Image (cartoon, rainbow, N blue to C red):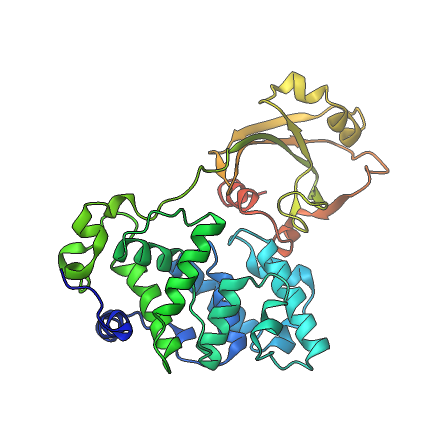
Length: 357
């Protein structure tokens, strides 16, 4: 079996493949670090097909870092709605304001300065500096881990400290002088399109004759990961309480999921509650003031999966003749027609799409 007698051989093969098969994406046609940063944040935990719409939307609304910095957090979260992992949007906004205040609106060029921005990790900083400034830094995302682990048949867990160090050293050693951006784009696309997680196209792979995992029959076992985090189940009972043309909302805060987003008043429990149990909960009584409610419907949504949580949500639509006053702290009274003005979690958005108020 041939391997890679020269450092550049691996990169040459990938770059030749990329010239033929690479994707034409708008953020690859620019050296603007703001646009590259925007694309990288949006594409974290997000497929390109889904992220493209959000990227174009953000660029149209916030064409530069100054426009993003000048926006309110509510506006940014509303534009981000449906994409999930909302901490990305909050960090994006915080970083834009830091760039505006600390660097006069000019995106920093040094790796350590980029890395210090809120929400920017090692991968994102390396990607920005590589693609915008051709900084000789190797990027390591899921696609790159997969390609390297198979090409070199590495069995170190990619989510271990030692494994990440080993892959970082290997990726850096394969980086060709003078073309870091091209090499990084090539290996990332190669992992996304050719060396895919399931059913990789090994039969038509330009690395097939040199791939150690293919020769050893370990392609499906690469990359190796340590044990996965246990998924936590949570039960949400949403109270969609209407009075005439008004409805109640609350805004999530603290360190839990969806901080800063709006939702209907919520009763969380360790299991699903029936109507009688829900009506007896103190949160329910405080919200309704003990007044009689007309129970219109109860809709159990399909389980909503987050990274380490599985949400079991039921939306209970209720109607009262008169809302209690004053309302519990943090509860807002809004016109039903203005619901679209509020950024809500994807779970709530899906309910409203199927059952509009």
